[in-house]
Image (cartoon, rainbow, N blue to C red; front, side, top):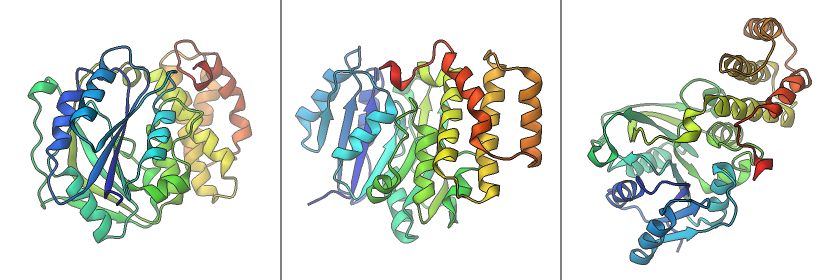
Length: 308
């Protein structure tokens, strides 16, 4: 019998956080059957040893190992392929879950017939060993959106605090495997195929500062953000112009931010394109963005799929 929920969790050098995250996972409340699929991305610390310890103690835990570091986009897709749950709980495993996080998210998914549910993450300066998260309870706000793509193209929808149906994940193709970091591509590609999203104003996770190299490399994030929206524009030429303009603006915003962080983009063309895109006075043709893609490809200290 398939479980209600599969936690699918890419892991790379999370040894310091894993025992605390897993304890919060085991503390989940409610009558919810679940499995846990960890995908180790060739960690160089003792993450794999810890994961194997979890699997030895709990028969609902599976650990997938690899021989090449490929990044979270590929590893999340790999884990979902192995998952058997009706729903997928997609979190970062260096955070702490609220004790009723999955119970509340699953309730919203079923009650409102939503194939995507998104919660909130909250940062904390406390060491992970001292982090606790209050139960969510029933006193929280939420909004239902029957145009998930429009909502995801707004603000605040890229944290890994998702409950989605496996059916939707498979239909969407999951993460863009041409991009190293998964956060932006996952939300975008899911939303393009989803029927309904529930955006809940409830704290699902607390996120201590664990010194993640990728999250601190803003040039990497904007490199990946640019590629996500460029690839989506290229793949969906028949979207309405207003939607394509939003996607185009996302690309130009990533270029502008990357220039701020040291990427060698020429100032005047970038600023001009940014202003015109904000005013809707550009043709959102991805071909005009190709020179910027070529510059992104030359940046140093960027993890790229082709580098693996």
